[in-house]
Length: 150
Image 1 (cartoon, rainbow, N blue to C red):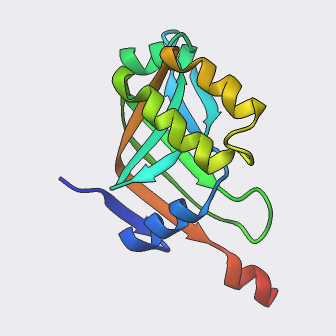
Image 2 (image 1 turned 60 degrees about the vertical axis):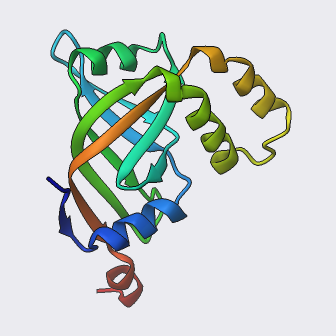
Image 3 (image 1 turned 90 degrees about the vertical axis):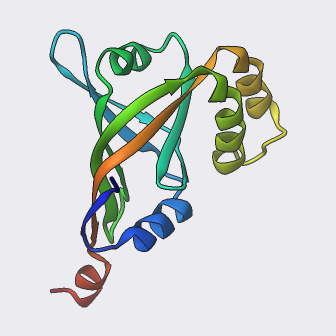
């Protein structure tokens, strides 16, 4: 079963948007108490899957292990507004953590060989990947509307 696409873009448009953006993904989950939690994580999009990485003791990991259903959003914080949001299922992948971390460093860190990147890599043995398989994605793009002033 594939992803259901709603809104402005089809699958190719969503993929293009995600591949061109280096803003964080906002990931929402449900805590054990039933309250929602939203965290911002770097992401990497590959073959209809969203990948994030975090330390294995991060609270989001435990919440997603308990309840893998999640929500996510990637969007512009400055006009003209565009982005995607959706729901999916998250899987914690310990063995993929270091590989995904390296990809995220390449994508987000200005100097992938600098001190910040080295510090991130020094913690890689405790890094886990979060693999998000979307169920549906909704997209929006207000660029034309905001530029026309209407």
